[in-house]
Length: 193
Image 1: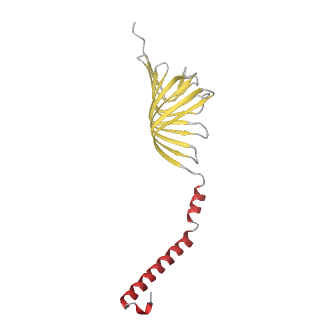
Image 2 (image 1 turned 90 degrees about the horizontal axis):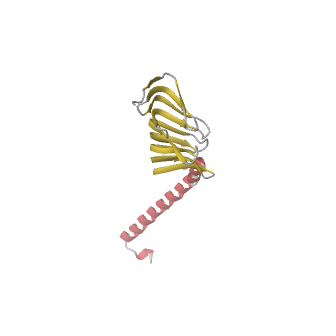
Image 3 (image 1 turned 30 degrees about the vertical axis):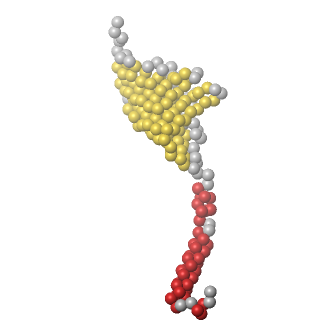
């Protein structure tokens, strides 16, 4: 291609194209110099933090073939840095000797994998294996050897025999008995013969 023999119009097209390519090349090179560290800094700032939001989450704790609890949440969010799972529309069971000792349902629940805590909050409904049911604002389970504590607008019912309201209920780790505390009102009815 001889530059001198090209018509002026084609020379203008070649020059405009060369200028545009030059501007684009300059822009890409400048952008890469400015942001060469950007992705690396973001990854370093986040460290190992990972967060996941999932539908249909099942969490369970089993040691030495002994199941302690299981939780199902319709939706869940896992934060790897804090080791916390936040669940919505939660149902589950606590076990003793691989048998269900307590079942629960709650609007929200939190599981902390670092300390093993399970906290249920908002519209929590619990049924013990002996038929005692209770409603509470919050339930806190720390360990299979420690009592379970439910607080806030606690209503306890055992069939037609007992209805109690309380500020707090403490359920023994064996799920066989409980203690109510705070402002309480209990109504005990005799079984009909």
